[in-house]
Image 1 (cartoon, one colour):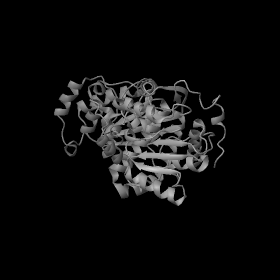
Image 2: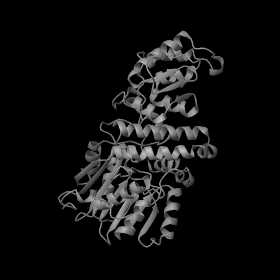
Image 3: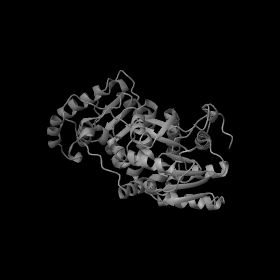
Image 4: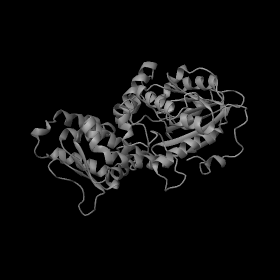
Length: 424
């Protein structure tokens, strides 16, 4: 998610304004400086056709043009925050109710996102990247994935697949597209009955169970989320698959054994840039050198920049979305792996997020009652911002298929895996 509001005023000048800030309750009318600053902000987002409005109803927007929507700034603190650090303060202010979006949220956020290309800001360059240690990784997983299975069951598909779906045709429902994604992964890996498969970051177990049920493989699936593991184990027992699937509470760095296939869906972005070479060591020791293969499915970038500051603070602490070059250089090459196929499914993820947003909107009152208004607004914005990021190309969704260097690829062509899934 990006909020490219860039006024022609430097940080030092805004800091002077910030020192003159007053509590919101004491500000009834906007002043000359308020109107000057919002005019600069309005000019910087002019191509988006999004109207800015101050707390007293005043706006610098040209009323002769119909806006896509409006951002209503409820106090001076929010105005200055948007000018000083928009990537953080847009989310903070929306979450707290100090910034209001009038009009459709998703199109407004997408229009703002389209204004600029992904780039690293001076804050990104100065912000230290903290290592994802074993303890930090467990805390980060807990903060996002252990919010409660009941929460995710409100708006995900029936199998709780919390990653990009695959729409082999545009009429697919979310449930159909998620099953199509699970099967696409299996077919790309050319899984064969009796093989041993390692999955790292297994979520609620949908892929592991799908591999075992439909392809007859034996799966060891690793995860750090107690909530997800509990759900996965209960489902495995209910579906009588405990003899073929083992769900393990352990960090990916501590996996043992050697396997015919390695798969990771939605976990690499939680590894962190500093630990990409650590992941290489895991691949090197776990994938069978003769006939083994692996697949990485992850959110990535075209250019190396950190995740949005607000998303890092409120949604995905410790996350980093790597580029293809970073994964190839720091993970696959050191692991002795050769890339044999890359596919970008970013528009599939934009559609997945659109479905999630639609479903979340239907239950947002229940989310607010259970978790509070700030939580509900944060997740509403997170889903809308993520949809915009994939729709505009700020984010990519890569699937990389690879094999040990010098070994034979699992297939002669790539057309077969993209045929209509054979399971329903």
